[in-house]
View 1 (spheres, rainbow, N blue to C red):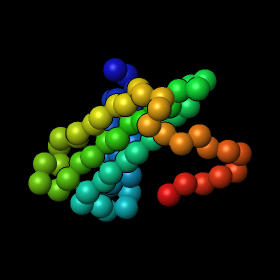
View 2: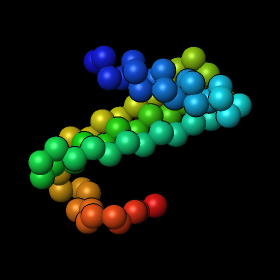
View 3: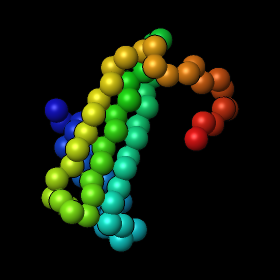
View 4: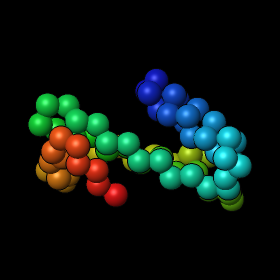
Length: 71
């Protein structure tokens, strides 16, 4: 999966830029009525290893309205 390599590169770049020991990156993408969630985690104990989960389910995410930010 090409997007996973690009996402790992982004996480590595952010980790170096901000001198972080750990990173947890979550991305949500909407495709029609469906949501795709990508969670990427790297910890200081295994700095060369990334863990990722991809969820293609559509019913697990609230529908976002225009201009609404969720934390």
